[in-house]
Length: 348
Ligand code: ATP
Picture (cartoon, rainbow, N blue to C red):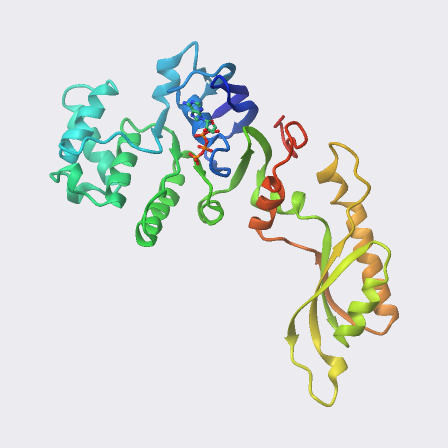
């Protein structure tokens, strides 16, 4: 549904976006994640056709945005970061006005406005002045505008920015609802937003795409390798034993999974988080080098050492990091230009 090829935007002294390439498939709900100033808005504006790229190409639903702008733009609804609403207009007037701007004509105007308002849950304020609406409602009016004409693709720039927690909840619910029958690309710098609404994420940092994949893929690509073990026995002894393995960098004790009887402390079931040393760095192979067979072998070595020393091992598997840890590893500390690059897919 979206194909971006080597998109670059140069604002003169600032290269806001450079060589960004990605694909969003039909029906996907994709988060476009980055810190403030990373280049999200610039990229989304180029996708929506409201900003021309310095170089690169955008294809929306098979239509090249430069060669077939009307067809391409007709397939998408765009909610800008600051939706240009007119405070002195009533919601119905505004939606009908925007429907006409989108080339909806005659008797279809009223029906289109009504349908979009129903989808965005603003029917109850149709006769209210936009200036009198709460910020949450105004955001939903912006969403209704994006929905006019039933575009199959929605591009939403920070749709929950500036909303209070209840409004955030409502807008996220609405996004999930819209995701059932639309392709969605939404930008955010808030990780829970991605976890709450998206199947997949693209991570942009300092204008470059630095990672993309499902949330699971991102976790496993960038967490640094390690193991999660549930071990029955003396926790401190297990920790010391694992710490002696040459590839183990650290061992953290989690909360006991089952309390031990005071008379038999060695029957306690504990959770251990083991972090492995990074393998020797080979340029461009970070993701592959920290996953797969090597890690499986290291986990096997941990289990063998524990079992040989008389520990019970209830569970052993790769460490799953929180998504915010992944995000930090991708965006902090700021890497010099060109040092970090895409870690997956077709990003460059
Ligand atoms: P935020 O979350 O803060 O909106 P963002 O990820 O959307 O950030 P952009 O707004 O795309 O980032 O900005 C990317 C970079 O380009 C920033 O360094 C910004 O200062 C710069 N920038 C954006 N618009 C312009 C402009 N019109 N002229 C010059 N520089 C700009």
